[in-house]
Image (cartoon, rainbow, N blue to C red; front, side):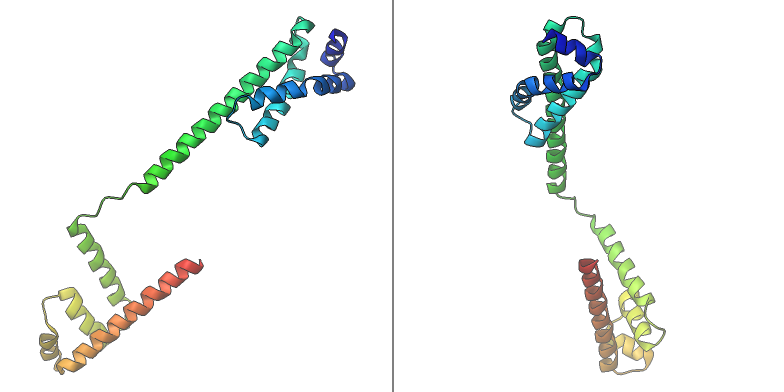
Length: 185
């Protein structure tokens, strides 16, 4: 075995292959023994262990120490992967908890301010005309009733009510279009 280790240290591929064949089962058992690694991670430990071992093999002073040295590399790599897996799991748990944590409600004044901004934007998006004037008086000035708006504009109350209904229908259509676009996109 010592001769095979010396030849592998000189870079002989056949010797490296023999060492791999002889020790890959033991390295795999060390990786599996960590208990937290999946099959793909165990395979990563096996491969990385041999890559590191063959790279560092010229530095190994005592060929008899090869087996223990190789398994130590495997344990260290398995521990590092396991620690990384645990850290990723903790981060995922923390993110899940953050997502579950309720977002505090907006203060009522800010909620009202946002709603007014949305209504203002919808009204400003209307084409100029009687519907826009009626919606502006009713929703933005907010102090006039439908009857008072009708008197101010020289209309019947039913005309004002009809304009407000058309505005509300337009808002509903716009909202539905945006929701559908969000679902499709």
